[in-house]
Image (tube, rainbow, N blue to C red):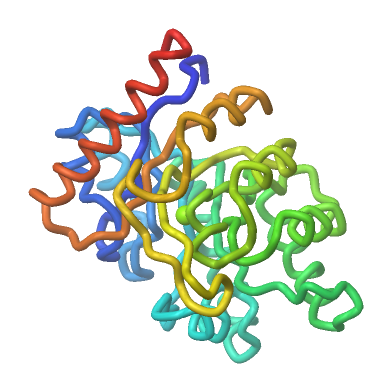
Length: 282
Ligand code: MG
């Protein structure tokens, strides 16, 4: 990729999360993170249709984000219970589905799979920690065989805990998708020192904003429009520049799929990022 920091949005084909691809096109966005479509949409016929539609729109998918039936982000304890491959009752099934999602991404021509692993135990002596290390290695190895990278979404653990986990997994195709707002929403630390500390692992980012909870780590902070929360995006870009990150700036905004509202909010976020990029001659 030659262009530094191309703009992107988190988009959805059918899963009801993220921006509709037509809205992305209207806003002039050229890259997207794609929320995984439902299993019934991951057939060869539908994949061929998606590929043609993306080509027609001039949009490149830079990461397919895994999502699973039964996940809920209602509050922090619910996330802990339902999100990712950490919940034990669904661990085996979701790990298998994750491998299928990686194959879907490959068929779509995408070399990166992102996911929320879920709440990894903070204590490496926890037996579950070892099991999650093993699963992550298996997923990485399967993806490596297809020339793919695996990006873990940040936010559900402090930067030093995540760094220790990534180091322990020890796979060359494992990286992170750094989401500054998640650090705030989950109460896991100030995002700017975290992105600097985790610099070598950062291979994609979400541009999302949020305000701190009055009980960090216990209750959610609040997601906001870009530039209205506690993330200083001018400083965020300065750190990204310092750590040598040149990949897409992918706007993530969890608002209903109402085109008018999406156009207004995502348009505002794009304007902000464009003005901040201009300081770098971009
Ligand atoms: Mg995110």
